[in-house]
Image (cartoon, rainbow, N blue to C red; front, side, top):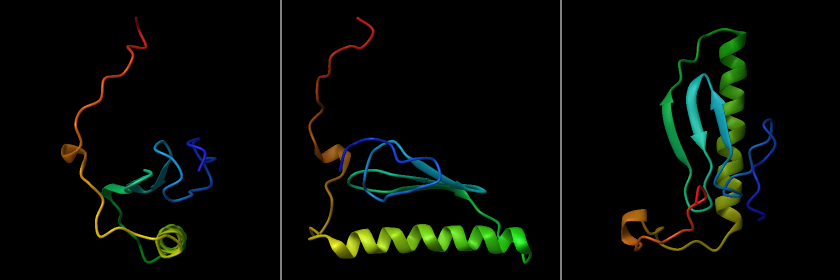
Length: 92
């Protein structure tokens, strides 16, 4: 994992903390430890709905493949469980 964002048309689960795949109003935000879902998605019974459903299926299949390929812990520590880190001020 390089930490670089994936190209806009490609979503590589758990590869970075920057890429987002949007399907309708649903955002699937990548993370190296977790993937977050925000928004909603209405899938119509039409060609556009079929395209959205396929993109959603492709995305979730990629997430499942990535999870199945790794040695997984019981759970990922929540951000609140970790002590805050001090970082250099980029504006100083």
